[in-house]
Image (cartoon, rainbow, N blue to C red):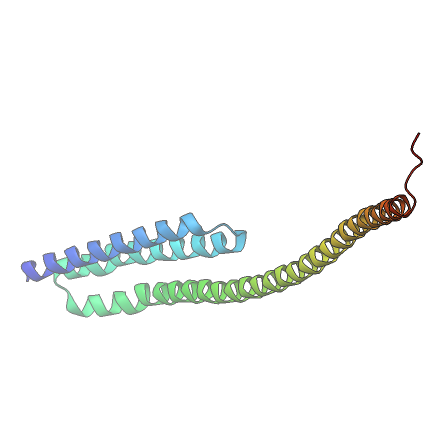
Length: 168
């Protein structure tokens, strides 16, 4: 049925565009060499599946040869599809490994940041304590001098009050 064939081709075209868009989006985020190699392998496998499907299976569908369709699919497309699935599995394994490594590095970074935070806090408390001691010591010195000076003044005033100066 040509109407049904047109609908199938439209759906396949839509699926191809969605896959191409998804691969393009993924390509923008792939920065590691191994990730790019996996993506290239996936792209090549996808193109081979598309080409085999279009050249063999869809040709047989258009010619209306049902017995040829199955034979061409199982002998031509299915092995390529298994290769495509293998490329997807390799990407998935790489992504899982990369995620685990990244999570481990993030944990190490967080531990390092915590350590540095505690060290900086300890250093800040130590420096603040030293500065406070220095300031208080300086103030105490000044206050002692002031108290000594006031005591001297008081003693002098007491002596003056007890013995009035001679009047001339």
